Length: 97
Length: 312
Image 1 (cartoon, rainbow over the protein chains, first blue to last red):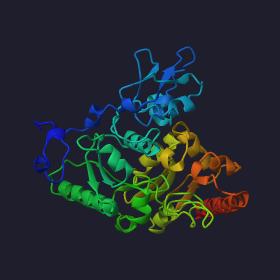
Image 2: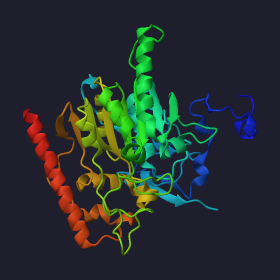
Image 3: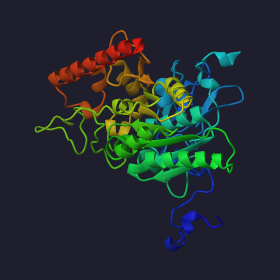
Image 4: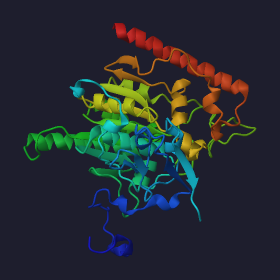
């Protein structure tokens, strides 16, 4: 699709919409919803991966040393990771305006 | 060597995300988590038929889609019927040699409204005809997408916008429909309950379901912080408490043989589960005692069924 789909007029939208690009929601940066961001304390992190397991956004990934970090483009700040962390090494820090 | 053991480590899960980031679910959405686990268990060789509901809306907001597998949106009432058609189509194409032989997983997904209320006849048809497909019902216990209306999956006493707690009624007046028993009554290959707080249990159940031919039904409890009036960060804890208090027992029915996935020696007090949730805030001690007596009777019945069917 050459034209940006958000700029189509309603007559130009095909009946029965078909998505041609899988996982195109990656263009949709939901990080702007966040009011708190998770901060990992690497001194106490045991790299178990429970935070990544329970993340509904699938935005927590490992870095090259095996520590976990949230992709702040997508993190909505739900704080599941902070509640589920076994060692309590994740703290939620309010976003500054 | 390691393939012979079930190793439950979060780091050993496949890293590929087939339900991608950027979907528009609320903060702390456990149904989105359920779909993430489903796709981790099934892998890319899957076709998903999704009934209208929260998970259809949030994953396919125009013009983006969060799915990395073939996915079709269908109306509320016919997700199971479309999955039946997809499964039959694959079978015919493979018989005619137009499609490479091999297993393609077909999954129908519906919410509790789309399964318990509206899609029940299509689901019954799919289970009765024995299509080689799985129906996944993610149960957040009301019509959350349209603004928390009661469904027949809403438990007794829960306050929703169409069963508001007040002087006249104590929230939902009827008990939750037992979906899995309806599935088991069709004598299907595999039926199970799961909860998003126990992801490995759920993924094992999905894999086990697809090791059988025939219709499969999985009913997963997925707490909704918006509709349950809870803190988004505590949805995993609430799901765990739902299982540990016996409100939502985890069990599987494998060819008619009942088995508890977690056989609890004692149940936690129900108040631990009910009190943090805003939708149960109005319940009196007597009403909680009635609910607790009912769920204990149901739990004892399940344990008895496990004992009886193990001998048959």
